[in-house]
Length: 295
Image (cartoon, rainbow, N blue to C red; front, side):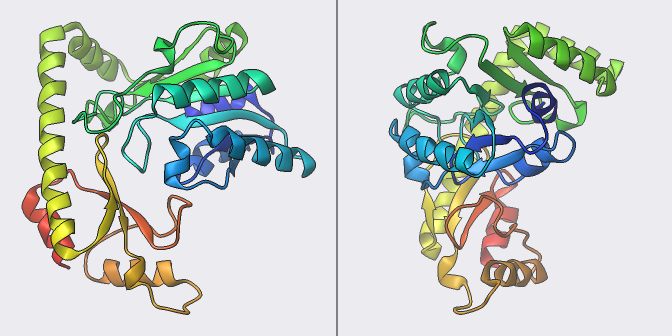
């Protein structure tokens, strides 16, 4: 859906603005075919959830314009990937006002919206639930899919929620080349129409994710590995910088190769964050997670 929205809102070499750290495949999503560039504001993970993140957006927007880059949209992933937390409502409103002020599209990817497993941090708030008037409905677009909350990536089903007719027409035209199979549609229809099944499945999923999170964080604490506490998604952001080879030009790649040689895969420089921080997916059987951490 990112690729299709990229075609709809920009031209090649236009920019999509987001904060750091960020999901590491956005360049491919927006760049491979649509030719858009990801532009990253200079932020920490703490900055990203603060209403004042728009100050960093303002600077990056000005710097981009000075460099001849036309920023077309701001992208957020809520709950955030790779941090595993939801954006506070006031931060969402601040970002929406920023987009309205500069007439930028706001893309809110809410693909983990039903995978919030605790109330330790702010709950999930969809931008669609925020009172009208903060941003033009012509600038607001939400994406969703079956691959995360429902664990059904193989269905290849997603959607864009927008009131912008021009963008909707582009989405309708381009999705002719991305049509899901009839089998996928039939399965998804059966899932969604059975409300009792949906509610039970999602509740069970949240419980199991919470249990997996409790297990992996206890293991990380025992090993003395720092991490960012989370309450959503299937991953935890961990600090492996103490294990980097000092002075090595490609220290993160070197560490990742050493891990891979031991049968553990963590992608280096994936999230454009601080040196030595990695996103670790933990929703596997406890014995597998424990073995990976042991290695």
